[in-house]
Image (cartoon, rainbow, N blue to C red; front, side):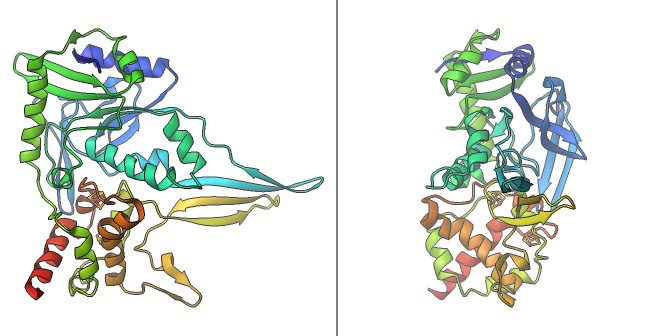
Length: 371
Ligand code: SF4
Ligand code: SF4
């Protein structure tokens, strides 16, 4: 596949061409004190010269001394906000002369171009594909949004304080799921973007912008950048035998211990790029039109497992255990992959700083002590 080296003006042209092609372009923006996906009209809307700082239970943004475009990590919003929106109308039922008329809401007609998508995010989209598409009952809204999207990935050049994608084998370099992938190179003498095509569509777009052909030296620079990022990653998940650890640790005291701090606030599930739980609600307006809506739900809410008369997981410990053992254990049985990509969002955005890598390490330590 083609690889070119562009200057900032070449990157500007890429985004302009996406707009001209009818795409709604989504990329990182500065909003409400965060770097978060939003609509971008041009490269001027990217967080130029900004970075973020992330630790367990803490997030901030600050100015850098250069004009970097992509020197930060993932924010609180993931691509599932666009591919599987927090609230979606699925069905309306209206009165008609012949009786009731059932209308399935057509999928949105938007064609998304996602810019600045990290390797962990691409891996999360692949997981959501397995959930929503690889089934006898594929989700038509998700399928429509995925089928018509265009993705520009970014190889991470800085490691986040809560990231652990390298230990999960999901980053920091993008290996699949992109049309184009960008590596930002900032040196004293130049500021460039090494852009590699991953699909024919990507190669076609790249062929339409000004730039020079990449050399072996450029490939070496890209390789060195991602290796350095992997070395500097803030955390690591002890991944060996995770699925079996989840089975063996079902009755571990770890769950009660984490429940002493967990607020059951659901934040971790709302920021996680792979969570997919939802609930349905039916409402009727004064005219008599009924509407069925799907909204995100969370296994941390008490109502999530409410059956007749009670909730199946009534304790916080049981709900936390469900979350982790599903992500890291049962997901393998359901989908053949881990449900965690190591993006670190659940660590950063947990108000009390509960760290999934630490809790798994404790679980592994207790299992070893017993063995
Ligand atoms: S469990 Fe946490 S680290 Fe893993 S994908 Fe979800 S938010 Fe990211
Ligand atoms: S682990 Fe943290 S983010 Fe998740 S529900 Fe508990 S307190 Fe909230």
